[in-house]
Length: 154
Image (cartoon, rainbow, N blue to C red; front, side, top):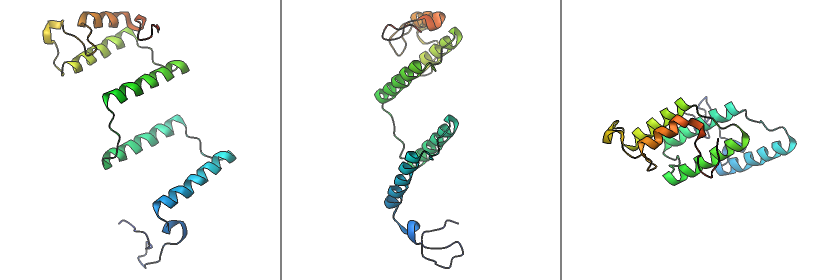
C-alpha cells in the first residue's frame, strides 16, 4: 500500500507538517543546503567507488524505467569515451589490452559494423573506421604497440 502525503500509516488522516508538507522543490532546496553545510564541516559522507557505481546504476535504471534517461548521440558517446580514456591514461588506470583482447575487440567491432554478418566480403571488407580487415588484423597482432591518435604509443 502506498502512503500518501497528509495521511498516517494508521489511516487516521493526520496532516503532514513541517518538512513533509513542503513541496518537493522546497525540500530539495533545504536538503541541498544541508549537504553543503556537511561538506564545509567535513562530516559529509564520502562514497567509495563501489557505492558510487551502485548509486549510478540504480539511478540510471530508474531513469530508463521512467523514460527520462539521456540518450547519447554517437558524437556525444565518442566525446565521453575520449574524455574517459584520456583521464584514465593520465591517472595511470587505463586498461592495457593484450594481443588476444585486441584481436577479440577488433573482431567484435568488425562484426557489429557489418550488421552482425561474419565473413561478408570474403574477409576483405572495411571496418567501421574504414580500415581493411587485413589492417585491423595487423593492429590486433601488434596489440598495444599500435599508435592510436595523437601519435602516442601505449
